[in-house]
Length: 212
Image 1 (spheres, helix red, strand yellow):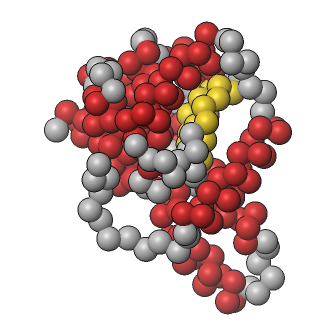
Image 2 (cartoon, rainbow, N blue to C red):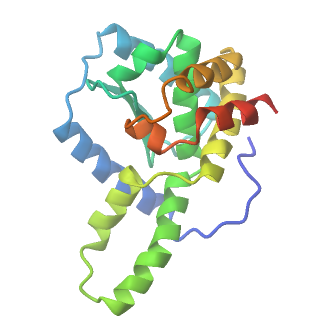
Image 3 (cartoon, rainbow, N blue to C red):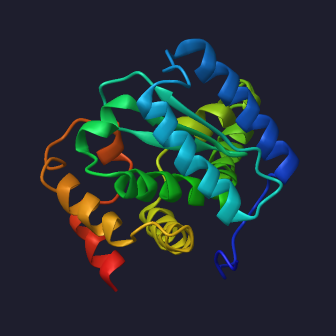
């Protein structure tokens, strides 16, 4: 499927992006407590994950899906297709369709190579800093940190909403769940200190965009 028609600066090859994703993946596995595959939350994530792999038709993505035991509601996709969902997110999800809305959104970031785009833009800035400060840290570690921690722009978040919505509809999930979920999130994101809300557009903005 056509993901986007934008022109964009991209310094990272898909191979380099995958290596960075694998490095970040290993670090998260070693520092996080994962729920076992038999846990009901893990089974739900796996079911949605199978649909993501099927509908994305992207053999270059090496999909893996995990649930991290953490109270904070959050989810993210590393470059290359490693998707993590926090167990705390299930407290604000009303159905598997709502879970699919979150996971397809995060998977859309990976499919559209938003991580590589984000890193490429940041490297422009850090490249200029490196000219001024030649000993400015280790670039590989820096790129891994950017891939995991730096929030996406609102443009990329709304683009991931659009892509994710199309894919979840193809997978026979109810796309209205995305609107319902963001409406619910809108009740708790004002003043929230949770990382998910600091790295995603305000829910009211996303609901308005999804309804267009």
